Image (cartoon, rainbow, N blue to C red; front, side):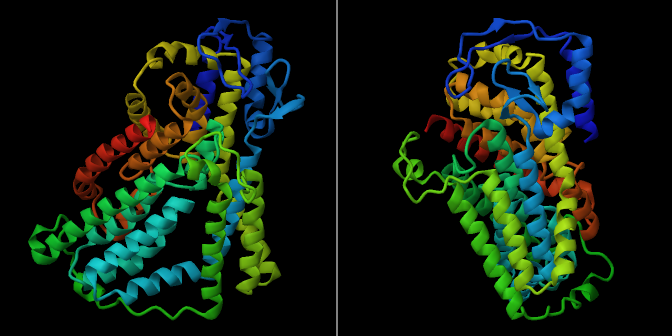
Length: 482
């Protein structure tokens, strides 16, 4: 949020330097290539100062005037702010927190790990696959910090070192987030900012998820086999007491009937979310303009927010949390997810400043010549590369997406590339950086809990990062030309 606050101030200053101008828009509101012209922005210094003051408010519920195109809280027109995404993030935060309050998801993963405790390779593959699945559908990341106390002793008991446990947890969930299919905090926010459906491009993202998850599991297992065969080749060695700690990997309690019911509800809710957002006619026919089937729902963030709020209550009732505790957990869950929700608002406020000063189109025009006629594959790869340093500066996926997409998505139109390719390239860059950058709690908290040096973790993970980057470029290039 500090970075976004500084970006907001910097962009506001730049509005006095960058010339204002606009494109003509088509019926969908997208800029028409070659129609850029200079046009003065309304108001002077005091007006711009008011825009700066109101930027977070406009980022939440600013309305874009249908006649002038200016965004203001009291204008008449279409919603420009991110209120829909904001509420959706709070709703899914409430749902996830209620699910964890039942203990069902934690217990289910613990039972799976314990059941496979004597089959090392299968244990690594199963835990990583589950974490990756949760990552691709709901951004499972920080929640992994609670599993080190279970996974580390299990891995030590099987003859592995602490790096195997670290890789299993961090890379399992991380590759799922990298190859998000419907992750609301990455794919959802980016799709909304790019003006496309959450389900658009899901076939490419699903293929990426399958391949990248398989490669990552294979990478961790290769290192695990090497350490188990020759402990001297461990990157981190073994600490005093590791053998004693391994003996403490006790069996977790069995799942209760209520917890099993909660897991069924969670599975059904996420499966239904995926079904509700996919444009099935387009996906099955391969035609972007195909007439939707009668049974397609075509849901967006408003309906999904309602779905997760209702699901939160349903899970609480089934798990018998009680009215007072359920209410408290829902409020706590929404509060815990206020940070990513606010980063979306702040980032959208930056977009409002650029829109009202009419410099967004000027920025687009400055790049238009560079991307016009560019091979689609090259453009997709460049979007991936450009977002790598941005992901380092803004580790919040939600804030990064809201900030970058208003510029990147129209560029895809100029390059004659689908906007879904830009979404995929962006989230891949964000996900790849979040596998190693020291600005995320998932990485630094994880290596601390596993008692693994960050430098040793970097040595372990960098070959995989190179492999994943090459595969991502290949997928993005394929998606751009398909």
